[in-house]
Amino acid sequence: MATWYVISAEPPSPEQDSMSQHCKRSYDVIVLGLGGVGSAAAFHLAARGQKVLGLDQFRPPHPRGSSHGRTRVIRQAYFEHPSYVPLLRRAYQLWDALDEGDSEKLFHRTGLLEIGPTDGVVIPGVLQSAQQYGLAIQSMTMQDARKEFPGLAGSDAWSVVLEEDAGYLRVESCIRAHLKQAQAAGAQLEYACRVLDWRTDGAGVIVETETGPIHTAKLVITAGPWASRWLSTYGVALRVKRKHVYHYAVSKPSYGQDNGFPCYFFETPDGYFYGTPVQDSLGLKVARHSGGESVESLVGDSHQIDVADQQRCRSFLKHCLPETTDRMTDWLGCYYTVTPDEHFIVDHLPDTPQVTVIAGLSGHGFKFASVLGELAADLANDQVPHNDIGFLSLARFR
Image (cartoon, rainbow, N blue to C red):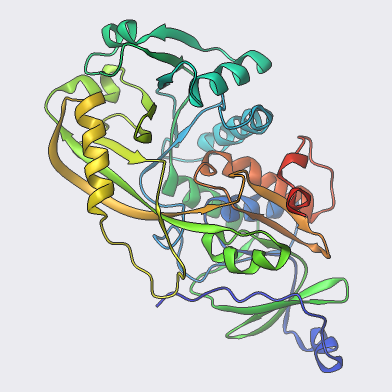
């Protein structure tokens, strides 16, 4: 059964205040949660010579968070906010570096089609980011897109942007690669480790586990949906939403990666839909970025297929990617952890500067995992990040 991370920052009692003297283990940094961001943080911290302990209550990569499955789309012309673009440029550099050191190809540059109303959210946002940062994109009409990418369908009134320097990441392979590199750099990783609590201890932190207390100078919390209950202490209401990802068989080879079909992201009257091209017998990936069922507690939670969500995805495919069939070949569930403004939290805790938290990635965070791990290392070492992350601070919720 799943176990919640119970987190506390209450002042220690006199008895507790001397407890650090009795901790059998002590580290420079403990990373709590070893998914997409936590695995990268453990690597970057260890690579800087820190004595690092990474803890996870499961064995990553696992299906109890937001960093599992086969693929995640990565893109730079970011419609959500132009301020993400410098972070993405650095993320690309770090993913390429990780790719060079791994036997499996992690970053596949297939290109990305973004399609929707000219006056919608996606197309204007993509154009703004591309213009502001000089990103290479190609604008086209829906008619031209259908000619270039057979099997594509949709309203003639929609606009299309092709971002060639985009694609997908092999999500679980990326996590394994970061964990492998973290261990090679000297990090100690412990799985199936239940964390009961944490509290400050002078300038450090005591992390309570089932096997006993561990002292650390700094704590980095990258616990994904498991951090949501705790962040409410700081006035941040994170919502955990259940999401679903499907693969469908295809009737023709038009959507094959080998045939040049890219990743895609549609803004439609029924919401946002995205996916990756056909890579193997599983077929075409499709998921609905919009919506999602609220999850009140992760304890004992398990994913069940959502018939209404599946029907919406199937309807989208029939209208926009009609060379798919009705045969679903794969399905999985995962979680989004969503902030009120759908932007990330990357900050020290305001009353506990020895604790860094990266949370609330709101369903669009994995592509940033490489750079977020680097930022976690910067913050844990009290270094000023090279990129502006002020727009991701906790101060915006006060």
